[in-house]
Structures are given as structure tokens and as C-alpha cells.
Length: 439
Image (cartoon, rainbow, N blue to C red):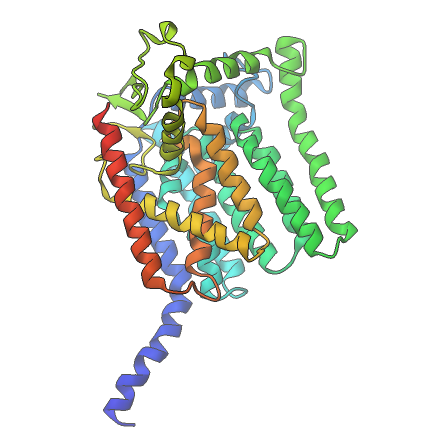
């Protein structure tokens, strides 16, 4: 064989080998990011609250001491408490609070390794990337996962579940996908009430999966069985409400929800700021409405007039575009034109394109993903918002972007799509700079 032939054939032979190693390279990528996020993890207030609530829950059981009982469901303290204890007891660390971050990172890495071992031989590189890159290997979600908040409890359950559900759908195992999807709604809703926004998307997914299966009773029974199991998971919360309020429904839910809806649209929470390790509040000023806490009661939201529209759209922007993969800022706000804003805006653009493409081509997940993003953005549109509140929109857009990039057949005119994505990213950065200039 001549040197010229070897030079031509070597890349063709090397590519399959590289693709075969791709899952292990992604695991290395994940490990490096998790180490970084664990080292830089910092929190206060809500994070400290959940660590205390978790200790109380695991010490005293369902009727543990909790000032937010009923409004904040029991499942997050349960999950946080489990992570504090597994795989290592946090007490063995010099900083027990850091133990949560280490354990959460180890759980995600171990789960990803297990999924890799189970699925790598069943799917090609394209399908594997479509399943894992927007979920368990997504650095935006890794950053939130290592901080003891509702988002962490949600992501620890959701990210592996999405990989499994996606794999089942690719294999046309509709009954299993429906069962896990319905069960996921119950678990994440009992981690954070706002997570109930995924219910409409999961209902659509179940309906489409049932229809694609040829309307098999097995798929329908899987959904019913998961719903019954969901009721059992919710029973402890009903017991807590009955014990504290004498009713299955907690009045605190209505009180806090009314407060949130009353003032939420007036406030713009870009993120929680820490100064010298202590909570100093959040960015409350709006780019559109000149309100602050001191004058909020004197200037009701209705007085904003036409400015309501761009204000609400700005809430949606903040919920779907992330300045930096960090839950709390400990050294001042991130740059409004930084690397991560560009990456996040590219994901948002390509994700929207991927979802539209799936809907147009009547793909099974097209309508469910569209409903997931719309419902999540709608839930943040009228609420005071931090980027982490739009977690479901970010999940939907990340999945849509992966489907757009790795779709078969690939999109026509990739150069035009790349130019459009870069143009949108530039506009998003300019808008982000303008918003920060108003604060």
C-alpha cells in the first residue's frame, strides 16, 4: 500500500474509532466540569434552608419543622437529605455543606456512567449525542445540580429520566416511555410546585405515543398505572397539609401564589447576589418599569401601560438565556456580553428551529417539546424570575437544538442556518447589554 493510499484511508479508519470512544470522552468532559462547579459552588439563604429542612425531615419524619410547609413540598428535603448521606456522609468533609455538592456530582457522574454502559451499544453516536449532550452532559444544568435547591432535586431526577425516556421512544417502547413520563410529572411537581408546567407537555407526549403505538391498551394502562403511583407519592404531602392546616390543601400555597402574581411582574430578578458570603438581595429593578421595593406598593403593576408587553417578554428572555452557569453570584454580576450568553442564545435559537422542524415534520416529540417551552416561558412571564426558574424552557430548547443539529436528514443550507444563529446571538447579546445598562 502506497503512502498516498495510507494518508487517504487513515482518517476514514480513525473516525469510527473516535466515535466509538465518544461516550468516554463525554464522561471525561462531564467530570472536569463537575470538579469545576463543585470547587466554585457557593450559596446561602434558600440553600441553607433546604439543608436544614433536609436534616429536620430525616430526623423527625413527615411532620418536620418547616415554616414553608405546604408551599414547599416534601420531596426536595427528602432528596437533599438523601444526597447529603449518599454516597458519602457529608459530616466527613471539613465543610459539611460542600459534601452536598460532592455527592450530587458523584451521583450524576455515576448515573451517566451507568447509562453509558447500558446504552452505548444500542445506539449510534448520533443518537447517543442527541440523548445525552443536552441533558446529563449540559454544563448549564451541572452548575445548578451541585447547589442544594429545588432545581438540584429536580435535575437529579429529570436528567437521567429524559435519557431513558428518549431511548425508549427511539426503540418504540411507548408503554415504558409513557409510564416514566407520567411518574416524572409527579416527582418533579412534589419537588417544586412550578414544575407542574410540564404536565401539559407530558399529556401531549402520552397522547401521541398512544396513537403511534396503534392505540394499544398497554400504553394506556401504563399511563393509568403511573398516575395511580403518582397519587401514592403525593399522599405524604396531603398528610403534611392535613396535620398542619387541617385540610389536604395548604392555604400558604394560595397566599404565596397571590403574592408572587401580584408583585412578580413588577420585579426582575436576574440572579441572587452574594457579598462576602452573605445574601445581599437580588437585582430588583426592571429595565422597563421604574419600580423598586420602596415604591412598589404605590405603583401597582397596572400603571405600567404598554410597557407591560416588553417587560413580560424580558422575563421570558431571562428565563431562556443564561448569563453564566452559576446559581449565585459571589463576585459581582457576570459580563452581559460574555461567552456563556453567546452559547445560551445559540442554544435558544437552534432549539426553537429544531422544535419547529419537528412539529412541521410531525415528529413524535415535536408538539410535546413546543408545549414544554411555551408553558415554562408562560409560567415565568408574570413572575419575578431568575434564569434558573426557566429550567424547563432551557431543557426543551436544549433538546430541540440537539435534534436540529443531529437530525436525519440534516438541515438544508447549513451555512445559512449558522449565519442566522450568529445574527440572533449578536442581537441577544446587544439586548442583554441594554438590559444591564438599565440596572
